[in-house]
Image: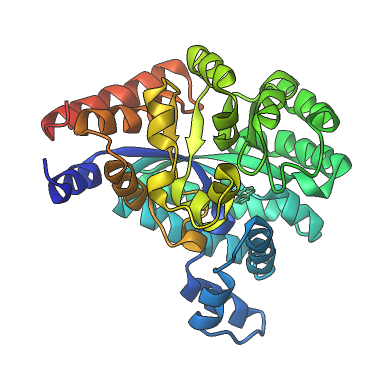
Length: 346
Ligand code: ADE
Ligand code: ZN
């Protein structure tokens, strides 16, 4: 298959996306609309400029800025509806979408009303063939008390479709030990545990996420590059890594992990991880903020040398790593494999 053929096949394939932040998915034009709703006049160029940063802290600042225009349940419904339409266009049939619960709480919002609006948006998406489950996440730099408060909200809202508690933000800002009460609480309530780790931090952040917080999947995980024994251990244990190449390029995480400036996507370790046996899944993280989408990330994988059969395994990993009951997961996998076969990927 040539590049165009593989792109067409990947586009037609039913896909899952597991690492995707709602608030990082707001297209520039929508930021302009939201800002206008709240009395702030912006141009698309203003947004584009805000969506460019030279390092991870610049990215976190931009995230803070864009979320400042999310003030009402209607704002949340708008961005969720738009995100889901873009996922449906790309044949994404299952998504786990992260909500920055910690940000809502910090801004003193009506979390219940916001989530109700999101839940309804997910119902609309389900009618169009996209199943959505939610991850409620705290920002690590907001501290242990806020993480615990966010965890309590995750538990309270769980019946509406929250399946996991997550941790984003600056992974170096707070030790895993300080986050244990929050994870203990959500785990006891039956929620899954997810952690961003090894995005900017080293292998010890990944190890602690698993050993101390019970992380079932790792967000990014680049830091294991520096600890081949850990990589092999996690490959053996089948812990999924949600890898987001364009995100890593744009936030400077890739440069930071590789210890040099100006690394391009060709230097991304996605294929190295895959070849070493890690269960890697492919995601966009904050697609609007990084100018990417899921099809774009699969094009990156193809450019990194994944064969069609390897692309099939990569895409299947997102279904096999989904936070779903085993029978549902298997049903998705069967549907995926059937279509992959029809499209000549197997
Ligand atoms: N929140 C949204 N995107 C994130 C990222 N890439 N890392 C940490 N926290 C985030
Ligand atoms: Zn993320």
